[in-house]
Image (tube, rainbow, N blue to C red; front, side):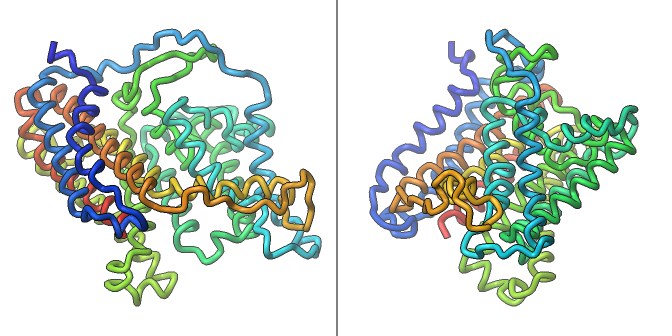
Length: 452
């Protein structure tokens, strides 16, 4: 009976172990004012990971997730027609439309940001991927560039060999460029800057689809197609070709993600950029790199360096694992085989870091729909709506963030163990020592950043 424990059971065991550390911290005020030191949370999270690792070694002797989705009918249907694609295209037009008022010489209200920042940084970048982790990959339908490509009849022929040759490296580099726009560029909050960036990206996507074919072009070049496919693979819900929703089980689609070139880079970039965003506002990071933080080139260097450090740590873990299991395994092969195990960690980092952004800044959408171009309109009577900070203390948010960080890493340990059992057999547990240390290190980094 013990051997029938599944993913949910092991995660639950981990949280039962971590509950005392959380339950005793009933302080008031900021997260640094908690009566239980932050170190206790870090140690507790590390203990949870180690216990999960040991439990998996004892109770999980055979691979359980490698056979992919089960696709049991969920007896639901997906809305068809042009409504969902139109929503994405309208959003893109609203963002690009921010260029119209300046071109026409219209005066905008600088006290109102317009709709572009909240659509891009909250809805498009956060809500859609986070929702996809629960309900599946709806971005495929919402994708405005796919809709535009269909409308313009771009890319009738597919060059599938490009996917094999280049993988998703171009998409990964474009994801890094997008996060640079968010974290480093001085105009990340400017509606005009976002409109110009969206226009340039649209032209790049049209050119990519025209060259490689609509689906191949998006697969290779569109950062958000690849990113949403990865995150939504966590979801237990999928879709058949006829649009019917099927229940495939949590995490099961992750194990059958194609091992594209650049897959590991994409996940490392997702983790590294969020890590930089959090670390950049901490006192210890600013104390160490204050000079570089004062300039855009310096911030760019720090952003790229953070991604490279995370990538180097993953590469070292892959090298150690490869040496432990035999000459037929290389570090590159291990890195590709285990890249999917970092996806829950990437999601956990993003959710924990941006949760308050969604809760509070997301409320600006209510005001922005009444005045999308900051022209002083009040179309729906909500233009004066202000943010309601309904949570006055950070302590409840801190507990949620800790739970999210720990859950993401426990799921990473589960996925890594299951893949190791399938690939390495008797050497599975020993091969994962370095990966476990990496998970503990990433957990520590995430909690240190959140606590500061």
